[in-house]
Length: 123
Image (cartoon, rainbow, N blue to C red; front, side, top):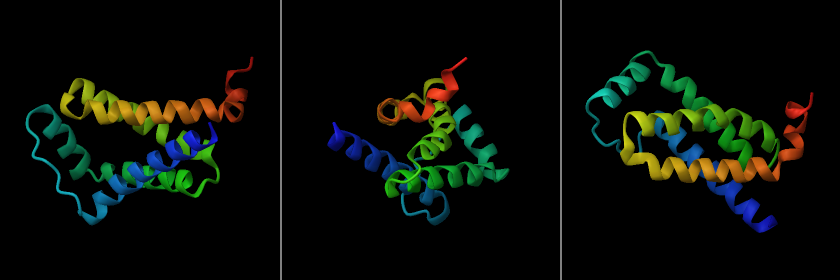
């Protein structure tokens, strides 16, 4: 199980670091969007809010890659993952499979680090 946890941690960290850095360095071309998804992404981009989100992605991804403060990395990435899922469920279903993979990896890591989050569930 330790190998599976390490693979999931490194894969999730790599996904977020690569896609987070892409917002700043533009090394992966973005496919054209249309409709509501284009309007939503346009609003995030023109308001520069997207850069704040990408900073959280890079920070959380780096923490997972380094292997230190994994619960903090998962906490930073949690809201981002929820928004990725909602974006693909409601606006652009074509990216939903990758969003589900990311969510499953994160849930697996949350389960493996559940002792760090136990205080949140106590009365």
